[in-house]
Length: 416
Image (cartoon, rainbow, N blue to C red):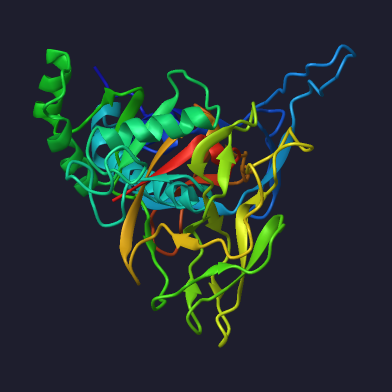
């Protein structure tokens, strides 16, 4: 029986299938593509609108308190063109699809999935909640037992789930934990003594991976990003004045030229966070992520840009973030560890926390072949053309995409 020629559409569909199966982080996040939002012929720098998960608030008044039921959207800029350039011949297209996938598609998509996961995992900088202790991997006893700095497994993962609960995260099957290889190895050791179903324990033993448990889907990803702590000597950093609100806070008492790197997390003494829906205190100190690298002046003064904004609950009940503003002289604490400490930023998150947005690229005419397909919210193009100078058929696979963190409160860092 003669071989059937593998068509561009078959190549694309197989590439998208392999890409989806190779990704860890991408597979667990919201992926938004549709004809409604796609931009035919989109280019880097274009923006598409993506849907933000709705959140409703309960009124206790007799009169109707109407809320907008139309789904809101936010623009996400298509910042990255993920491209794999390769060559294959007409003879290659005569292979069976399985052989073609193994030789050409699978290694290409492994590289693309790694790049996409790495960029997506860089969104940890938007997450302001954290569990664990920098420098202490899950499985080893560390921190203070019964607190959010406890690094013993499974406590650290249970704490991550509790933190999501306190932020009114949906309690469904869309909760994920992504761990880098060394953290996962430590976690497996720490979870080994749990009362688990035999099939789950057998799977951990055979694969060396945690898959499901404690309310999460677990996955390993070597692309987990690391945070490098800033450099500062011993300080008495404190809030400079009372009643501060908004997206920055004035502090003093730092060592001269002390540095806070973007992505570090700080807290203020006796400043407690609130549940975003019922505005009740969580009884935990509110965490704030530093949104830009900041340096103290020679006198130790520093104005720190932060997220979320400081919004006392009460009159602004729909969007309060803290019980009350930090007091004057409230101590500033750092959650990123010692100077220049490098710590992996593993994450627990709900799918609604992050989104990967893709749009259609234009298919050119006058080429050997071109195709475009969408699978599981990812649009990919395949273009091949004959090069008269080299007597080859260069081919490119492209995904035009943009990442965004839509609901930072639905994610928690698991530091190690």
